Image (cartoon, rainbow, N blue to C red; front, side, top):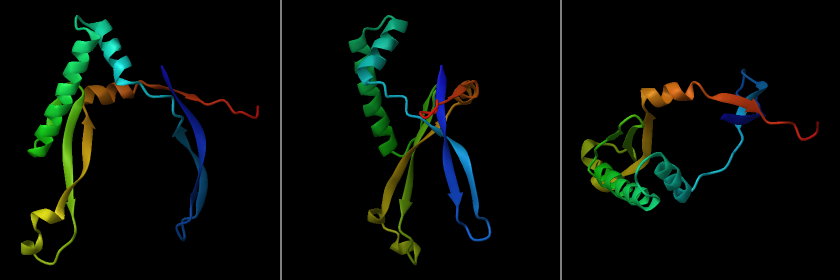
Length: 131
């Protein structure tokens, strides 16, 4: 298991801090479908693929509901999901009405275990096409 990367050029044009260099960019390596994920999970336990799909659908609905109540969801050794909010800047507290507030994004904070596992990832540089 390795993550493939390739060098990507970076140019900084900040006045007084002009700099050119390279950084590692992740090469997309595909996406797994829910169907395949359910089959893989089913192979690891006593649930059928259909059972796993049902659980994932119910889990998604429950996460949506809990986020709508402003709660964060700790998913065991996976991490924590939470909704972050934003609003326009207004002059007074009284002007900050509910209609001016919206969900900016859904944040995910990985667990310590997941972070530690990701520190073990190996990286492989993509082969150059010209060589």
